[in-house]
Image 1 (spheres, rainbow, N blue to C red):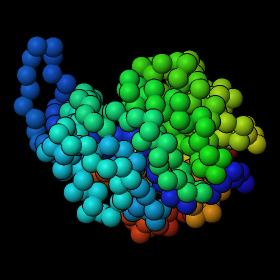
Image 2: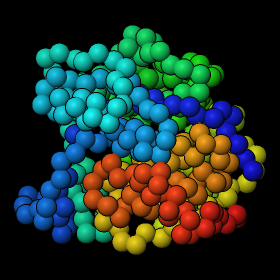
Image 3: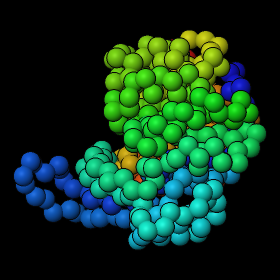
Image 4: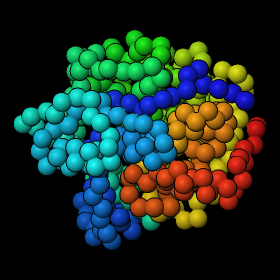
Length: 323
């Protein structure tokens, strides 16, 4: 069974927590048109989805990002405090946190427009002043690599991350907007690259997930892994130790909202690795967690540890198929 080079002890999210404004619609409106939403949901999202997911599954978490003092920022800070997630940077005075508007279609697919705030402006001094610990899994999103200020600061800081820390990257839907040289420089230090099928095609230029994941494995750190999430088909896992293997999925009973499904997958993967699971076992648990997440509306839908264990027991501990 494959293992990661370090067992994560805490998740530290470096980047963006903002507010999601979700509109559930029967279809996307035509250009210049209008549409009445069937219902709406407002929630703290972005990186919060990964943080709360880790916490629900037993992995300690901390937020190493910026928060403004306006209405959006106040909501973010209150939500983090309510669940006991510490904030490692001081508040930004006189400016607000950003938000996004998401349109969620009946099949659960979501389309976003993001309006960044202070969370997009991390500085080199803020990053250099972070008190990281041995075994920290430092998580960064492709959104943050896109932003002019945060992206430049992260590009300079991440390659020199202490060897006692794991670097986890989810490139996200804006993967092609990340400056190529920046992405390549960061990937050289990445221990865990987790991405969905669309992002895999765009980044690797390969339609077949197994081949695409194998190509990307050569781009990450020498002992790094690639986890390619392929929805109802589970995920492809590639480590330094062998050929790509497909890890089976748990079929979702009904897909309500795919917002935050990838975040649930990453959180569950790291939490399982923290408990000593092998990469294959952790990837299967992540598949199950993501399938539970899409059965619920909203962004932060990672199941609790008890809910995940119940689903694992119902489906058997593991249902992977190597290919």
